[in-house]
Amino acid sequence: MKSFLLSSLCIVMLAISACSESPRQNPRELSEEEQNIDKIISEASFQDLEGNAVQVSDFAGKVVLIDFWETWCGPCLQVFPAMDSLQNEYPEDFVVIAVNLNDSDSPEDVEDFKEGNEYDFVYTIDNENVGNQIIKLGIPFKVFVDPEGYLITTELGSSGTEGDYRKAKEIIEQNKTS
Image (tube, rainbow, N blue to C red):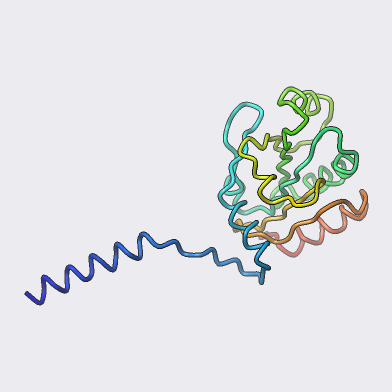
């Protein structure tokens, strides 16, 4: 009888632990808002221009910049050359996921932009409205994620081409694995 009770208790404990969600253990001290962004981004899925799902976890081992933008956003486009340069400097350590919010742009607009520019980004569409969940004030809005998939920081707006370049380079240098 004791072994039956012990076995039953073990099964119940396993079921409880399997069903309970363990919180993400980001190594950084985050505000409540940042914790929310960390969770949303870790579960987010975007759609590339061929219709495939793209997730941050696809780029494990790299610092990931998720850059929310639209084709009409001058400050967004102003820093694209700098981010592309960083991808070329750190091909094993850094990737840009350019997430078009799809508010005023169509997927065709994004495809036309991609074809007309030589940036080597992973172009995606925010088909699950992730931006609406995490962006409070507008774009450009950048989310930096470390090689393990944890939020490093977010940035609203732009510090110009050189300023954004320096900030992003520092983030890459501090977080790259190689």
